[in-house]
Image (tube, rainbow, N blue to C red; front, side):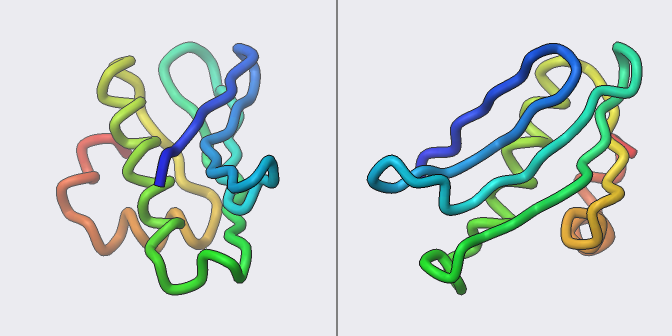
Length: 92
């Protein structure tokens, strides 16, 4: 699954498209220059059970490490992933 990203400097999203349809999306908003807040994750039933949500979080983690910024996972799904994956704790 290819994960795409959009970012306008104030807010953004990591998402997956299939046949021109956005079938998974995790949105975030910037909180200053050093942190972004993951506020929502949604995955279509078309991708149920394929780990799409976890892949979106992993892409956000990769992005945060590349940019040397922190993440505040307010979205319940993203927050649960951060609690389960100890390797992500450095970004909180």
